[in-house]
Length: 203
Image (cartoon, rainbow, N blue to C red):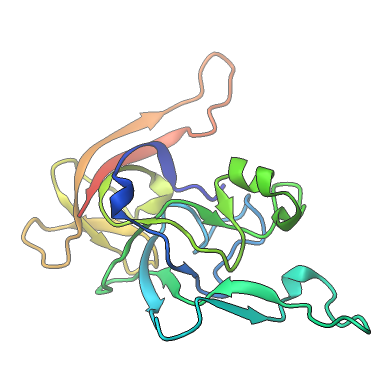
């Protein structure tokens, strides 16, 4: 599953940047995969050229076959500004709130089912991803390298897009660990969010 960020969160829409798409190659093949296209990835700016056109058009295999005869244009629109998973020492923009994926859990293209994309909290490749720059968020263990201790600081990990513990005095710290916990399946019912989690304050 590609949701590293869990439902409990507190942030203001004024602190959300909705200008950047995920850098090409980072998108998930399907929402069941995991990688840089996950929701809950800590990101940095990789292309912030505001002189470029707001939308770029290019041939993209996501459309399927694009070289049929007599087709005037078969191009896919993409937001020009780009972001990518942050690593140690990066200037962190924030945490991605939606995943970027091509297909659903059945391999069906989300391009043809926007309602399903919304239900899966996903955007298509090339679309802008909302990024929260500060707030309180709950992240699963998949977003963390090692373990975090409540009351301590955290920083970006060397493992792209993830966070790890930091010394209180560290200049690389980007937030505070508010708490931790664990969910488990109960009464014979599977909890899709089962596992360890952390509540963090970013910014």
